[in-house]
Length: 485
Ligand code: URP
Ligand code: ZN
Ligand code: ZN
Image (cartoon, rainbow, N blue to C red; front, side, top):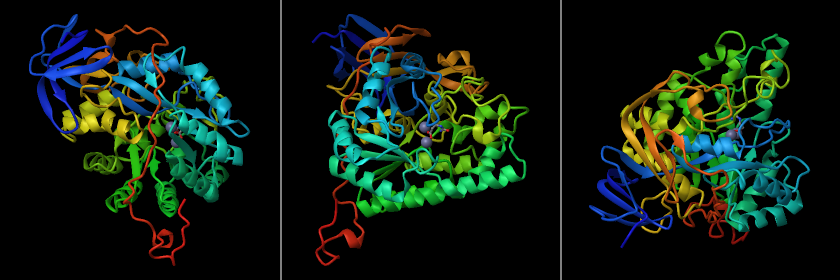
């Protein structure tokens, strides 16, 4: 058997084991694994390297307008290049529906943005802000049939919030058609109430962003979102969990066997609300929602990373530059509610998780693989990605576990003018990134042609049929009523 490429002598890590040997690649797929594979038009010496499936970034905002119409700094070229330098071979940015838009039109727009530009494989999660009957009955099922089998909804922001009834309706559609609902869970009215109090007191500096969005607002909304999903018997993915209370709610639901999934992000593990209190307007760089918390929170979130409450650590890359095109689109010194929400991090996600997770002894190498790619592939239905097995796409990253580098904005290869991780010393960096067998990053250089990335049609999401039902939905306990969607 001959190969296009053989990756030779690396320490190969999967979610369940680590072994030393070779990976043979042919026609973009993994063709063989073995102690020693001969041949190969190209042989990559992986001695001393760790070999893992390419990262799958499950949460990124790329070429996306916010609800107020502000475009992210990264498009599908810069965003995907930055992702690739950070050890990712696939990503699933959002395709955002704003009020009045049809899903078909939204997807045409994002196809035009992604297909000519992405250097890595991609799919989209939809964002749904206007679940009209046409959207629920026709357009969403059409998107699911195309393999876009997840979407995000918001419990906050006036222009995005669906309300509980809207959430129930869309969870029902997701359950019926095999899709996964992702949720941004923060209580909208609590935040608006806090904003009004802070404004009355004249407290408008960036640091008050953290005060305005209490941990309680996240916990309340996560509890409600899980309850709504539970009523319907639908799966739910809670994005960017930032609080111990929220993580505990997810852990409890998972322990009960409910199909509840969740992620946290490096910023909630690495940064704190003190970063919002930097001099002048510097704190604006650290405004994201939910907000950064404190050191005690970080320790608890790491425990939930280790225990499996979080199935992924995602970047929530939301790149708005530190200028009038981004953070200060509404003026040079705006009150915190007018500062664009979000921070970049797609290139730093995996080096951070490798160094501060595996390197610092908080997680194992196997957990790193699960958190960086394997779980995202399973939960989001990428059935040819996230594993180093024959037949899978040869999306493979070699890591040098010894290399130490300092994070700088220039090394992110994105369109941003800052990184919130600036100055962090991290040990463990990707040296070779292969996407479908092609080396796309090597020796610090991009080798990928713009537009080589392919759309990935994803499998449906089906919650475990044995997941417990609430009694009122169970015909054995509700006088035989068949009211389950
Ligand atoms: O502040 C953030 N995270 N902005 C991005 C949008 C979102 O809610 O994920
Ligand atoms: Zn969000
Ligand atoms: Zn986000």
